[in-house]
Every structure is written in C-alpha cells, then in structure tokens.
Image (cartoon, rainbow over all chains, first blue to last red; front, side, top):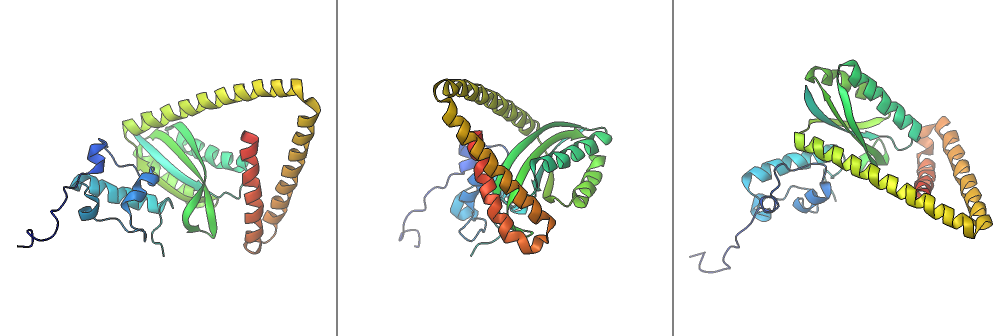
Length: 76
Length: 183
C-alpha cells in the first residue's frame, strides 16, 4: 500500500563505484566533506547511496581525517 | 620491508629551519632502523578543522618511507618526545599511493623548476626596463619581513601562553609575505 502512495524510491548509485575508486583516501578530505552532515556526522548509506564496501572505507577515511584535523569531529 | 606513510602536523610558529630539523631527525631515526625515506611532501600550512593546543593552523608534511615494521614504536616515541609535532599518523601505504606520491613530487619539482626559469627570465626583462623602481620595492619588502621575524622571535622568548594572540597576528602577516615572494 505504502509503495502505491508517495514517490517511487530513486535508485541510488555509489559515487565511488562510478569513479572506479579502489581505496577511499583520507587525504582527499575535500571529497569526504560531501559525505558528512553540517554537524560533521557521517552521512548514512541510505542517504548517500554508497555501496557497503565503499561506505565502510569511507567511515574509516573520515575518522582518520578527523584525527588529523582535516575534518571536524563536531560542528555547531 | 613495508611501505608506510606518515602524516605530520608541525607547529606553524616555528621557522622553516626548525621544520627541516624535525624532518631531518625523523629521517635519521628511520635510517637507524635500516629503513629509507623515499619522499617527503610539503602539504604547507592548512587551517585545522578544530583547535589543537590553542592553534588554528598547522604545517602538514607527508613522509613516505620503506622499513621493517619493528621501527614503528621507535618512530612513535620520537614523535611523542618532539614537542613541535602536534599530531602524527603512521599508515600502511599501498604501492599505488607510493607511486602516486612520487609522481606528484616529480611533477611539482618540474613545475617549480619551470616557474623559477620563467621568473628568472621575467626578472631579466624587468631589470632591463625599469631597474631603479624594482630595486626600491624589493629592498622595502626585505626590511618589512625582517622586522616581523624579529618581533616573533622576541615573543617566542617571552611567556608564550600570554602572547599567543599577538603571535597569531604576526603569523598572518608572515603568511601573506612568503606568498608574494613566491610570485
């Protein structure tokens, strides 16, 4: 029933797979910025559409970037 | 032998020579453990995403080296002992990353060489046309930069905690000038 109302869910595509990225790099923090919220949280897969493997790499990369002060742990 | 990458944040309050000193110490530490430093990339000063030791900026370096894994604890000890290192991270590097870093360094070196050649050519052209004017401007710039360096050095000797705001101001002035000199 619910599927009949509302919009059809758009097929999400993993942007890392599209770019054929093998390993997500914590040094490219400008790119990682796209996958964090305004508060600095990691964007969930359901929003970003990443595949499971790349999402796992992404969270690790974001955490490394946070340690090196390239990305914030939290923002107001 | 494994390939590693170190990312370092060194305090931006230090002079360039002191940065070289820290990196030189790191190199000798790696070589002591039968490793070899393949390349050091200067990531320059960057704004930190959050304050570290009350500082808003840091000077980033990337060091790529090959060594046995057993020297990692020794390197970590060196980083902890050295006060000017604000943060460090040692990561295993893949072959591709290694190759990319070396390629990037070569590209940058080639670019810098090209630019310096161009600059030299421009300078020759400038000196031919307007000799006196450029000479005056340059001497002024040199005087300015030397005074700011002195101010910073004096403050470093005083109580640092109290003077942090001032040093930040002078740093910003210092930061602007090298950019101009590069051009």
